[in-house]
Amino acid sequence: MATTIQSDAILANLRAVGHATNLDLHGSLAATMPRVSLTSVHRITARLLERGEIGIGPTDGGTVVLDARTDVHDHFVCTSCGGIVDLLLPADVISVIQAQLGQNLVRDGITVRGHCETCRTSLGSAVVDGGNQETQESKETS
Image (cartoon, rainbow, N blue to C red):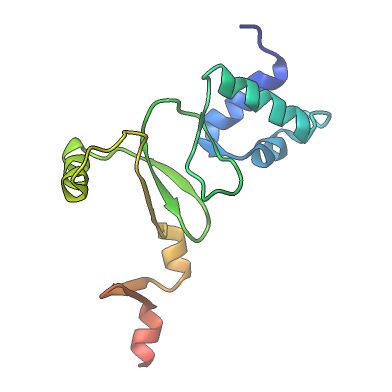
């Protein structure tokens, strides 16, 4: 398949960060390729998706997140900052989940949500107590 300088740059940028939106990719190209429009980025990523060169990451139904990986894999998504990290969940974890659901899962990847380390730190070292989250600071002032 023929590629362009722009598609090569978009693919390289996505591979460098792992997960990004079209807007993120456009911003990362702005300094080196100021003439590439957001519409062009969208068209290029649509072509890369169609060719199977990139994948779609987990979303909450809003903005499409592109994934540098095309294989089935799991993710952690921070519910505060939206950061996404690839996970490798062992087969026995998948088996436990399937056993609890009483059915076989279609293996499209599992997404785990929570607060990343950076956000936990900025939230004041959140402590989970019986399903209720409160910060260590609020526990100390109680």
